[in-house]
Length: 147
Length: 147
DNA sequence: GTCCATGCAAATTGTTTGCACCCGG
DNA sequence: CCGGGTGCAAACAATTTGCATGGAC
Image (cartoon, rainbow over all chains, first blue to last red):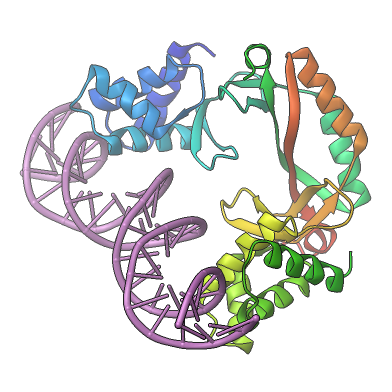
């Protein structure tokens, strides 16, 4: 899905809900779409504020909540306990691998693991509807520059 | 590890650290050890308070922190964002499967999945040191009593 | 003009800490 | 007695909400 399509989808959602379009929210959403990493509301707010200091934290926060509702963003909480927002990609589910040193977050998908998960669940008489899996470790760069 | 052994281990740890034994902490730890489910500090506090209303939340909380330091308990945060404390079992690492309806938490271990994780990480040039994996779904009972 | 959006400030929630008093050794 | 333990209350941090004002249609 291109950014243009995402914006269109959001525009339709806003219309359906009887909400109004505003340049503030537009700007926040734009900034978010142009960033392809996992951001906290705080981080996005700081990013936005650099360009438009008149936009408040609440607006950024509510824009992210709106994007979550629309399905254009996903809230994720990693072990640091902060809520991060991730742009929804066209390809469905994926998991994360996070560098404990630099905080870099990479994404991956592995059907074999998901099949095994379903298998394990069956053994325990559970029906899986979702899962969360994160790997923590060190990326190449951080391994090389070890202290 | 039996409860007795755990208590012994804690006793030694307390001595080493130059801390003191008190009946309040003893009672909290006892209550925790007798419960084999995943509890939040709040839940344990309520449990304790029923028997000993004079014990405060702080004591419960600090006892759990102490147990974590000792390695006798493990802090876990699932998707609801609450910190739960789990008794450390003799067998090392395991993951969780959680019923979205009744909240029941079951544990499992699967070496195949862990091997695949390492494999995936290698492809991405990461070195894995830990992971978090939780499956969410419905347990047998909740599937049968579906609304 | 009518509502929704905004952004400040304040409430909330879960967790953690400061401190005066208590109590075990 | 002394030093750590307790438990209240208050600090904290992240998130969420109330409300008066402003702006889009």
